[in-house]
Image (cartoon, rainbow over all chains, first blue to last red):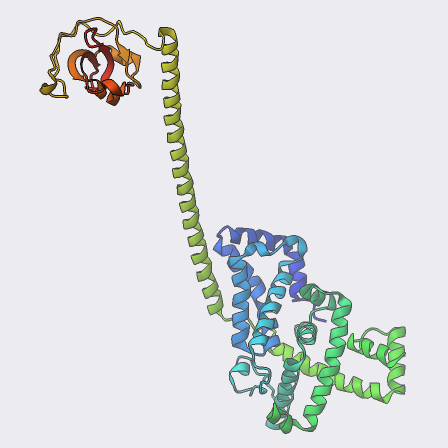
Length: 209
Length: 225
């Protein structure tokens, strides 16, 4: 697992500083708030993006999360955990609300449409056919991830996409490590099942969703 | 090793970790179980795809407009808070000032009451005024009007005056004696009790009038009693 850039680890190290910054921010120090925002917005944005698959939704969720810090900084209790975990918790609630607002049956988004337009595309030096196949497969994987139940998707987003350790993911989602492993295990099984199905009948599966 | 154990170990990257008893058992299971071998192969492909998918957004960050909006909101919120605090402090200061004014007024009033009571105690309830200023000879016109038959008198009389309610004994130094004729009922307006049966009777009396023109003490003349 990649541990060099993990937000969870950074949050533990800077927990006290986060507290200080948050206190200053609550007293009207805009610079402290900006520092806090810049420190935590990246992981939260990526988490929201991977959970919703939509850049606009991710942007709105990040804004809502930090608006909570602006309006109700006392909601965060330093004794209950790191600020990063608190922000992930707020983000999860917002993501859930976002998902509830969506219609129950949604078509798989076309990669060219708005939802995925914000994703940077991989550059491959191989043949166009290879690139096209790779891209198609990646879109299938992305769609399969987005179709996972929220609990499994969270574990996949944090452990497999953000490449957090199980401990860091457990801290962010405020649940035991065993729960993360179990969700990941079941999420992997679902992903494999979905991708197997898509591999067999890709066009029909896309068309009927 | 069971299939379940193998899958958990595979998920944790057990096969790629350093060689140990778990890895040996996993490799052995892989050779013996075609289902787990297929699953492992699929998982490796999926893992690569997921890694690539994650790598696409590893550097993704919220657009700068989000930060601008948040900072703007931050400024608005704290400006409003500051204004509210100032208004709150001003309101409390005004309330405090009002309380202080009320307290001072009440204290003065109480002080006057105490002084009055102590004076009345020393001189008696119907204190006689012997120190009415009798040196001046200023004469005043009775505001009641000439039809009452008032007569201006020299203020050098000295007799028994009864203080009207609310009059401070100390303020009688510069007062003047005014001789007036009035109906007995008018004494009620000065705060004295009047027998209603004789309210219409005309009486003559001396009023001790202060600098402010207000009667402060009264003396009924013997003829009108």
